Length: 295
Image (cartoon, rainbow, N blue to C red):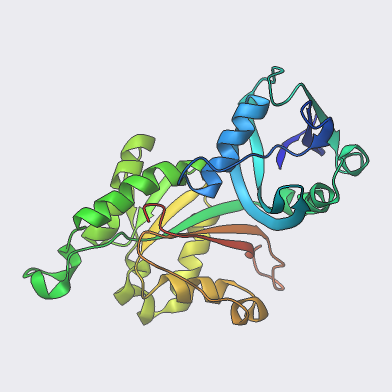
């Protein structure tokens, strides 16, 4: 769902006309080979609308029956980041419309359902990309300090895939547990962004379990800091517990909090309700898991 802030500041959604079907739709398309679905969303929006985007929270998928069988459509909130529409073979017209007007223009109920989630998207104030480091060599074959154990060839492939996936969400800052394999996982991304990696001792396994609450506060500080979305690379003993702690208890109980090496949690935060005399806090409103993009 491609959106932007309109002239009045109110959000607007891009609705496109597809001459092949003579319908009005949200931009969408098919996965190209083995590319991550998130990359499909960015590519298809660019091809159909001419706009670059920064992805935000994943929205509910929809499933419907078409002439050629059942179809599942995966949606993301995609904030416009520049570009100009030009009519093309797939799309010959584009209208920017408000939330109230979009349902009347869209041809399909499954698209109209997605639009209902825009107010929650606009409320997002911070995005943090929580990465588990890539694969490292076996512990029993490494003779030095485990802190220095590096990525294996498979881990470097995962790091290369993350270098492509993570920029879809617009990161500007990179943080890492002070472990060689964690830093190596995000080093190429940091180089691309032209930023230094900030070490986060509280987000290593050893640091986290000394004081999990302090680690959660530190993650919130990173998310809240100015400068755009942040990447944080940590370890398998931290990531699932950290996500589970940030989630509402009922939501955490209903989910399997996966954390395979090379995978990512995209965490979206809105402003929380401060307690009496306390500063405003962040509240986790979406936690989207992306499996190892190199798999």
